[in-house]
Length: 350
Picture (cartoon, rainbow, N blue to C red):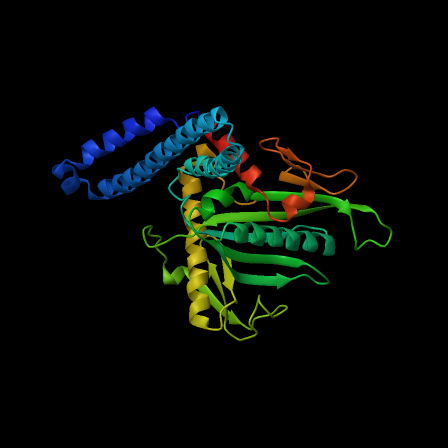
């Protein structure tokens, strides 16, 4: 399974040999320290992938040998036990294969996500909250931490917009598949006439920038405002006067944070989000030909959606980039989106 197009064993081993040859040269370290550091990190990732590959290969061979012995001896107990071991190992290999697709520099980082309701009032705002709940459940299933940065409740129900972080290994690498416009079709519970409505929400996903990447900010380019936190309270918002809004004047990018009690901590988080957005903007300019997923959202409306969630007249979730279709809508809305992530990463590689 791992030996296919997803994990090219010979290519990885050749690349590891090339890196080790460079890194054993002391002159290379002295004159190319930054590149040497990056290659050292790449070596660690490759070595780990190869070690895992050989471990899975050995375990599969062992299960195969023991399985044949159990069959010859008609040992049903051992056969059942080995079958369970094989099923668990296959699950591990599937997750491992998915991670081998995460080779971009930012994939290992935490993710900053923002969900904005499109036009459509209460119905669209309810859809935005449904997506928010979906991603929280997905993160929980992977033992990833989440933290709400900014939250604006809807007028009657749902949310107008929410910004939150997903923290853990490869959070951005997995969630970058969700960047784009999401479309829902259903009979609206807010329509007294029981009519079918189409709603849109945009999901923005950025890598959280750490100290290993420098994004310079000129204080003269920043306009900072403070205001009182607003919203439903509870787990999302603390009602204090410490909320912070920062505008980057040259680009007109606006970010805000109101989740922390301390104005200082809200400012730090807002600056972190601003750096992430500026970093994404710069990557977009430098690599326009690659059509990076970080570019600004298109209009939240017809024709721009990356995925459709149909609740009526039939039940289907379809990704319009990979053409993957899933009929169990409830499963998806409960946070099981791994099949879409897997399909998207393979599509990117192709």
